[in-house]
Length: 67
Image (cartoon, rainbow, N blue to C red; front, side, top):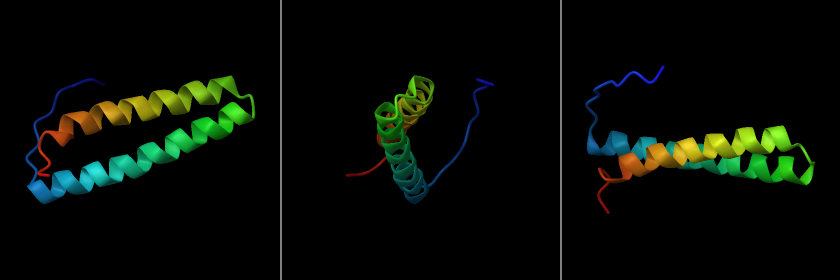
């Protein structure tokens, strides 16, 4: 599952991906907050882990986004 792939993207495509990932990550962060409020520790871990993985990927892509 951790097979490395090579992919060519335009600057615009990278920015689209980063924006989409950011929105997705925000959803997981909110879901983790709700799960925490409901005392559902398994979901808190699941959603927090997902947000962390998305943040890691976004960090890799940020190097290619022009400010």
